[in-house]
Length: 426
Image 1: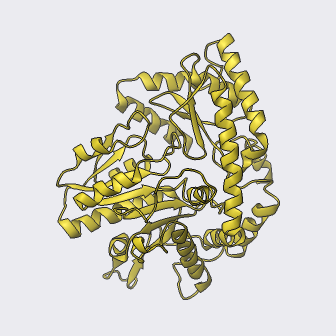
Image 2: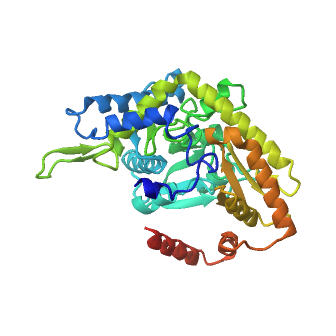
Image 3: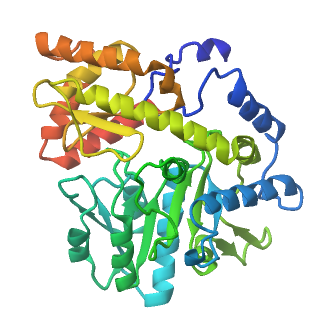
């Protein structure tokens, strides 16, 4: 296994997002996470009476996460509740499923529809397929934020929920959460806020004085929130939290079985058995860092992000997409092929995210990037110059694939190609 691990790429400081903990994987916070996961590797919160330790850890992770997202504010209603999940996708899936069933019980909706901005995470597409919900993807405005007026036009008697992100994955831009909350309230529908990236940054960025608009349960109309502890919460991979404004909504997340010969059964999330070691790791991460730790980490990440953003803006061939609100900076070009630039960066060991509509690339800044900001900017400048002087696809690069996929009018064909790729990869 050690031999196989050596074949992994060098990810330290080189990947967009991916690894959010700073430093070396054999020391510091990494060591704490490794030790706690190992200590509770055999545990499973499904067995409540056998492993009360991890049951307690989960409850406290949920409570601590809720606290930084407005649960202690009077306007939240004082009933915020939730559960831990395996990641942002499961948190979103559960929020959508719960909203669907809640709206069926409350308004009798049997042909559910969901409205999301085109910038919303692909997990909503997955939820729509899994739970048989009609999905409307609405264009964003010129600032790459959710277009509230456009979303309103799609609302009808079958609408169960709308969605906002704080920030969105593609461009790091926060949607107008307050306006969307007002819209949801006026139509008495559910409103989910995706805080998978921002949940452990925005509350602390606000304390540091950054201009952060309202985004959590203090906003009226927000009925559920997803937030990943395994990103900027610095917990082990496979830990997220889904939160609800009250238990009336959350009870629709649970599955209870009364007629099984194996006995009475009830489960809170999609998984039955869950890894107690991951829950313990998340608890240890939050307890060890505390508010001061997250505040310091946010300061470092936000300052590094601003330096990278300015560095990109100083490259005349590039432009930044919109006005990033957090630590994700997307950039494109009208002068060079941005995907060719990305391929050159890849040859230098960087692993960034390629985006579409518009063609662009983003970097999600983590603690791993804090020491290498200038190295990244130099490699980016050099890559732009290389493509400018020698335009054309790089041997083995992905620029031709992304370029062709973006121009294909038949999106079903693109979808089929993705499925074939996945089928051959796993």
